[in-house]
Length: 422
Ligand code: IMP
Image (cartoon, rainbow, N blue to C red; front, side, top):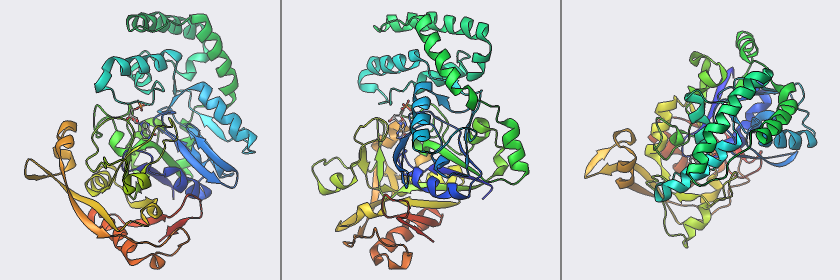
């Protein structure tokens, strides 16, 4: 396995948690390298049902060590709550969860500003999770961030935090929000630091030694390919790089070590928040919408839904060097008479690819559909590809042909065992 990255090939929520949970059994390290608690993985296993946002979801494998790289932004209250929940479930995180001191912290003003910016943008709002993600990454790259390492030097932290709170209060007040008190934030965050400190550790040597020793690393991307700041549907994206190369900066893994990239692909499309969704289904009363509609793990918002978009999958495979696909939720399609699949795009009468268009062009795109026959059988008990109805097999083969990547995993139900492995 060595270094395997698991990435979402759509707009997030592809069901990465389940395949990670599966692969973690043979991993020495399970790691997060991007995003923050805007991500939400639902993991169902013998310990129960968990919604986790920051701790790598592979932590359920008892022999795996969890790493949170410097590329992750951390809301410490959320992290502590999650650690408590996992410890209570008997997972014993002491000595097997390590967090980079390079990671930036989400401060209360980041969350306030996230909300105020969204409100100020009105109709042009991104539809963020309001977890402070955009503002914390903006502070990181404009040299205004607060990192865990700052807490080891109280005078440095005091001075930097005081400056930030003064600065942010001015913006907050100008936008009609309520200002923050330095003492309140300082005390709360010092308390968080005391709790998290036993898990803080520079990851450089650990990662380098692990690579040298041929240990297995499982890298868990947060969000999906098309929320990537550069390659996604900007400005309707998230604030961090989501393609596997982000693991290089975000964890200290040299790119040449990432030899396997699993592209997790939902059998249809969903998206939360604003931005183009070429295959969107607008009839919210119809059967298909009701089948595909889901509630987001992080925010409880209802996701927008659409037919499978092969142009999106093809682009993700190329961009991230996907070596195999994991198709999730194929069982959700059971019972439909016909299934539509977008095979390519047309824009102003011409054939185009995703990369030809900007976000606003993508909003105008005409998806070219192919209609396939559906299947009526319940497939959640199937474990062998050959036992799937012919129409379901044809659906999988079309995805392989269009993307030039083999579908090695097929999810047919929510439980861990509900998976066809080819
Ligand atoms: P932010 O990451 O909270 O700033 O939100 C920016 C955009 O990314 C919004 O459209 C969010 O709905 C979307 N987003 C962020 N995290 C996730 C996720 O885990 N799944 C799906 N969409 C997400």
